[in-house]
Image 1 (cartoon, rainbow, N blue to C red):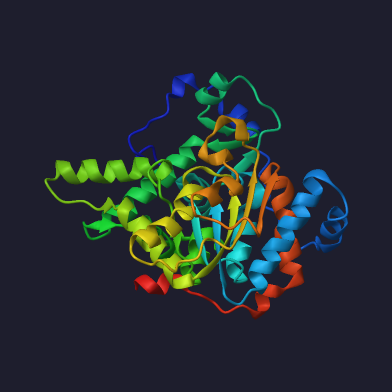
Image 2 (image 1 turned 90 degrees about the vertical axis):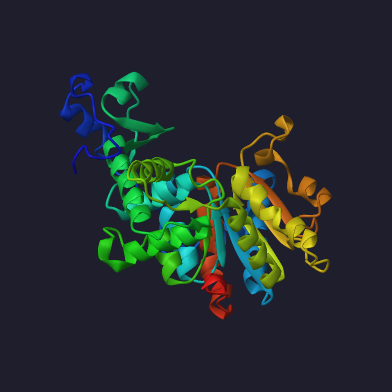
Length: 361
């Protein structure tokens, strides 16, 4: 790879040394395989406990109810850095096995983490965390105890720009653009073939990123736009209104829905708001989200969207309080148990595929 990546060139004089960087980026994050272990016994045992253990077991039960309900479409909602932290293949497995029907996520989850690894790059365990200024001098980005090579991330930025350059200059929803990313990978460009972006494309599971440019994608898309303007030409743009309309179309089509939410933020609120939007469009019979699970460590005292409880969302007419569960835990510690439990109980084997991406073909 060259330094022709958004014109962000390393200050080679500031590098401590290549050996130091190689040492810090020597232990890859290995993504958990939910098919390789059976979490049913531990979930059953946790259901007889208290505190977060019981909450986790009830969340697992609710997820199994979603998958067993023939009328229920499941929307996976992801914020935070769980993909970088080892849950990347878990999300792909849910798509492969018809355990989710649509996805709403942050741009970082889809681009900086998943698409990034599809290009052959890796995330690394930070077994040692030196001064962050030292990391900056080495062009290493840090997510808590996980490292990313900034040079590799710039390659991701550059690739996003190239995909944008190849498209007809018109408005696109984030779903449309991510579909093009999946197609580009499926056309033989993937270095890792089981990415979430490519797998969702192949299974007609739409992915929405309502704040798409708040990620590495933003750099590539800005570069695409600026270069096009310099040429006096037109450029593609992202249409956030189309995002909201399309996801609301899915809610209207789906009827009964269940939410599996990791974290909170924009993806959470965006997905819940589809009920209100459908009502505004005249669909007075639209159901609130029947099932809802949220795994979060956000503190409810700050009044933010990420920490708002599912009971609070009921006051806005978004979710039902009958079948909801908050799990206050760091997601990588409980999500693999919930997902493995559902995989091995096998309710997904009898589900009809929704293929919601075909609504927009």
